[in-house]
Length: 380
Image (cartoon, rainbow, N blue to C red; front, side, top):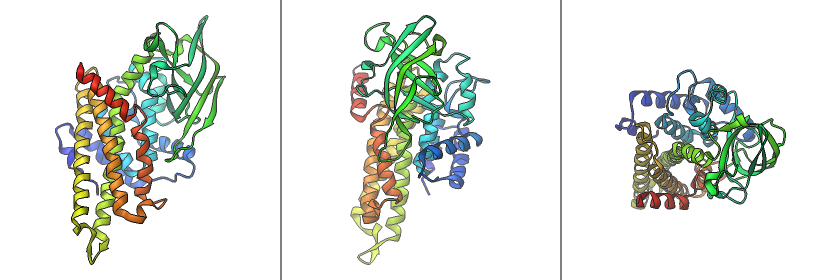
């Protein structure tokens, strides 16, 4: 049973504790799911999470607008990840894919949010490109003004939910100024002519990912999210909200790894005594518990700071994401080691955690990039 004592920390209100309890109970009954067809599994997870009401925090409620609750987002990702990595993925993409619409969308654009919050439409965030990953300002995709329309040409890659999403938030160069100041954001439905899935991408932890081709995709100017040239600012504002949640997912993986390790150490005998009696094993478990609590403190500090009204939490979110994902990798590696041969047997939970955690140190800002962000923010 995962440690729940952190819910008593002063970062949380009673509504957060109630949410975590209800979600954990739902997860115990519904997860994990069959991962043999990840497209079908993600569609089903989004539908069921929406029906149960657990997608509501992913986007603004158009009937009662208010800021996104980052603590609830983090608690949800942590809980889902502890039970099933694909469930965490399905939830996270609903938030990341619509983040720009929640924060900067027009009332017309925000009509999509009722569908995504109900699990009736899947969303995606199309930022990365083949030549520019973390270097967002160096993107090549162009959006050229043509009368009352924009025409988008180029490619996006490593797009989560690529190929199964119903709408994409897409970033393209509109040229108002050099570099980051000449990028804009667009809301593009998946059935828009010229938008094609160029390649499905197979990764070590199977998730729906794709490379997308935009072949003279024509959209009305009303598809632009925010103002011309505001795309970089919009993308960074979205990541400012959701970057902490990546750390929360890593935290969920790490908690599950510790739970599995405690079970293993208590039930497995070595040299005539429980594995836990070995001091080296006790040392590993102590380090795992320490890393988990330290990561949780950084994550929920960042989330609480944003929820208290901070306009930006760039430094706090970068610290939370960097530390939580890197340390979760170490926690899970220790779990694999303590499980011995079972730890590398395909299908074992710690083996799947080992594959799930690796991508979190890359997406939404790789670990090395987070160090640059932290250093620059510290200098400021």
